[in-house]
Image 1 (tube, rainbow, N blue to C red):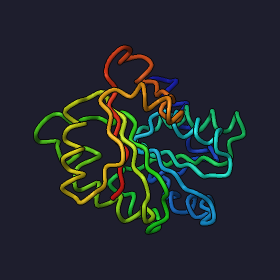
Image 2 (cartoon, helix red, strand yellow):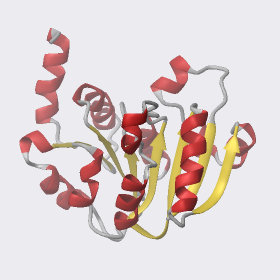
Image 3 (cartoon, one colour):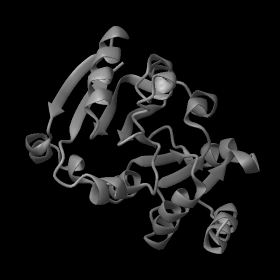
Image 4 (cartoon, rainbow, N blue to C red):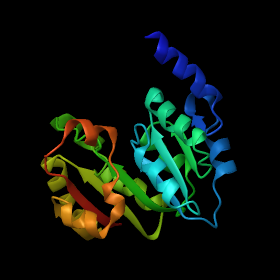
Length: 212
């Protein structure tokens, strides 16, 4: 492992706004962070946490949690949050399939899935973050009428998600094959992840907003 990466992993263990399953402190960090009187929003597979950071700055009265398993990526988001005094954002390092083990039932107002891995191999379909397995997990932690947002550049994942949401008796509020108009109506869609900035300039971005 490169020296810089090792340094970041060491720093991550000391950051006050990070909880890690490897340190057995995820629940402790969550219990200290969550205010049930405030709106709680998750970014799953958050990478460097661009959505969590931007939304936390825009909506200081709400709380945001970015979840990812990649520690180096979380280090970037957590460090930036501390540098900008964003006390309303927390980063957690654990596998997303365990979210219902940590988050209280019906505690989450919104979930963002920003350019998740489309898991295109047939054997990996269950790993898609809009598969029935994950949609059922979201149901457990979302408040009644809670929202889920998906942004992707992959049409296969977009079409699959529309199908599975319908099969799971979800309600599709918006769906767009190309989000230029939606971006005008919803400024939060203008937030760009590192992947979006570097990899998909000029390609179609698909968006779904739905309830479960």
